[in-house]
Length: 276
Image 1 (tube, helix red, strand yellow):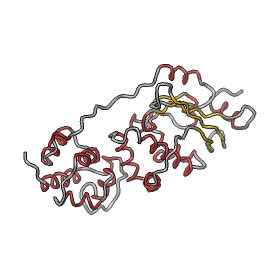
Image 2: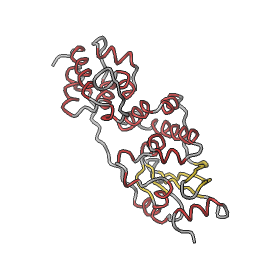
Image 3: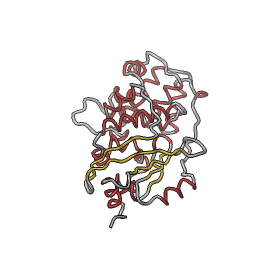
Image 4: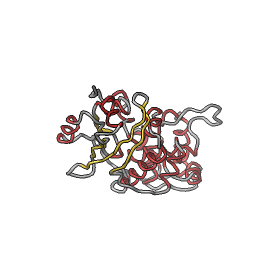
């Protein structure tokens, strides 16, 4: 099949029209003037400019392989649709062939987590995905087991989960630092498709995330202090430390603690069921 910019534009337009906002994680809106997604929504999901995406649909520019890859993710194309898109764009040989790897908690990390009973702890993987947790973390944050796997992400919870977002009394500071930690992590694997999807969806849904991501602020986020207001035990001031797995930064153990003689320590014991 020979490359044809008009065919590429027509296909993108058709796929955009076939998707609803909720299909790509966006909140539904009333009184939409066009069927499916708007051009600016697709552009934000794909992290490209609206003007460039418009010219793509109009057949006035030809897309690179990397842009096709981000558009395929943004438009939720299946394997056959991706094959067609690359064919009409003349980019068959450039199609990325990455296999998604399942993140598994290291056995030693899991044993350590299981032995932490009096204070909240979670294992964070790539993209700040929440891979494992203890019961004290459930009591503090939410029951992660009841969430879809795709939603078990620390950043998603900060921006999208009302209870977790409302727990943070210094939400803007904590969320901005989490964005900076993700930006730092992105350096190691900038072509990660799941990272691109996470950034694209949060950029569309939340103007604060979009603004902070654009600032390129970076941080390892290895320690800090969290201020919470919990509906059961009230105010909490907790030290937050992240311990990196010895075989690399792909997994980190996040532990929240308080000094033994503090009100927050007593509140944590009550929350985790260890108090008298």
